[in-house]
Each structure stands twice: as structure tokens, then as C-alpha cells.
Image: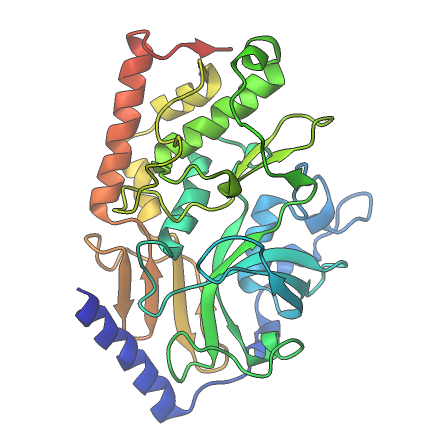
Length: 349
């Protein structure tokens, strides 16, 4: 499988070198950024209005600007944790007034490894849509992007090319959350019993991590709001999830339901789902090679090979959960609902 994928990626590399079609990604300014140009009734930019606490941009707007809008990296420094080369970048984005901070996690050469899996990271962001409104998301907005020479030029003279000849580096851009901190401890059962806001927030956090089968409960993978604020919990590193072989045995993990009870509204949303509602996780990102823009994010197309998590077909790179991982997610939902119905997992209003 890896040999086949390596050949497919090499074919893309050969195509780009022979045709000499690597063109500055700044030409992407002609892309549709209509969403960015909308104004709220009070005159504020749409990207900056009604944002959830700790988010620099609204989640759905962030998806658009991080994946499609022209941008430049104006600052590059260490992300402060992790072993897969994550960086903290400040981006100047077209039509967004202030720089936006993100975590940049470069993809591996074969686009998927045990401890660096863009497809699993993006699926973790997407799965919360099954039961949460954007204002309650627990995973920061994450997109796949290929940053080229013009995006990097202010801070780097050379680009590390994921695929030789493409002139850009593929990776995951994730919003850097504001005003959050590392937790001393996540679950406080006595507070759960007396603080409704806390109970709702950590119950939804646990449910999201249960659905993705999160298997690395290290303290550094999670962030929380400050003591004086409405409780919020965030999972900011989700590569060790979705039934991967890697597993952290040395810490309590959140792939099980650890909270005393779940929110009824969240459980009821899961009741409305069937297997077809999960299929969108099969394609969480797609890049197309285009002569004028290089590798460009496009809307997800039909799943090129449901049996694989990474698919390369001609000038197309497509990533997502494979059919087995989606089936396991369906099984986890079914098991959860059965436990709720028999009273093994309580729910609260």
C-alpha cells in the first residue's frame, strides 16, 4: 500500500516538473472569497462578528479563509509541544484586519503515519458536527492546505516540498485558540454535580473524544478556559484517534465515557443518524493540481477508494476515514445509544 502511494505521489511530482506548472499561489487572489467580503449589519467584518469564546474567527468562516483565501506567513515560531514539527504561525489573510494565529502541522511524505495523520486530525474536527453547534465546538477549525513560496517568503527563503516539484508544503492549519491554558485536571465530579455549565461543556467534550476514539490523553493535548470564564474544553491534538495502532497506555484516555452523564440534546442528535450520515467523513479534504494555483483545496468529490484513507488519482489528493473506520464509528454510536437506553449511561437535560 505504501509502495503504491509512493508511486502515485511520484507521478504527481513528475507531472509538475515536466510541465513546469508551478505558479505562485498568490494568483489564488481570483478565487471566490465572497464570504470574506460580507458585512454584518453593524459594519463589522463577517469573520470577526459573533465568534465563539476563544476563537479568533467563527468556525465556518475560518474553514473558508484558512483553506481558500490568499495569505502570507508573517511570523513563524515553535508551537511549544509535540514531536511532529508543529509550528505556530501568524497569518495575514486577505480581508481579515488582524493577523490570525494558527498551528501548522506539516504532513509526512506519504501523507499519513502513525503519529502524524492529517486525515485523522481533520476527521476529528468534522465529527463534532454530528451533535454540536459551531459555537460549542471542542476541536479548533482545521483544514488541509499547501503553502507555497509566496505564502512563506516573508519568513522563509526555502520551502520544504512535501511532493518534489510542486513548490509547496502540504499540512494542516488549525486555529490557535485565545485565552486558554493547560488543565491541571479535566474531570471534577463534585463540580459536575453542582455546575450546569461545567457539566454540559465537559460532557460534550467527552462525547466528541469518545466518537473519534481519542487514544492520547496527555495533558498537553487539551486546553481549557480560565477559571473566571464559562467552562470550555478543547482537544487540540487528535492524530492518535480513529482506531489507529498508536495508543498512550500511561494516561487515562477519553475514548470511554468518563463523565457521570451526557447531555440529552447531544444524545438525541445522534439518534437521528444512520450510516449514510457518516459517509461525509470519508472525504474530509481534497486538493487538486491546477496550473495557475498549484495544489488548491476544492470541495470534496466522490470517494475515490473507500477502502483507503489516502487516495491519489492523477492530479487529485483526497483524504478521509476509510470504510472500516466509519463502520467502527457507527458501532460506537450504536453501543452508546444502547447503554443510554438500558440506563448504563445517564443523561441530563
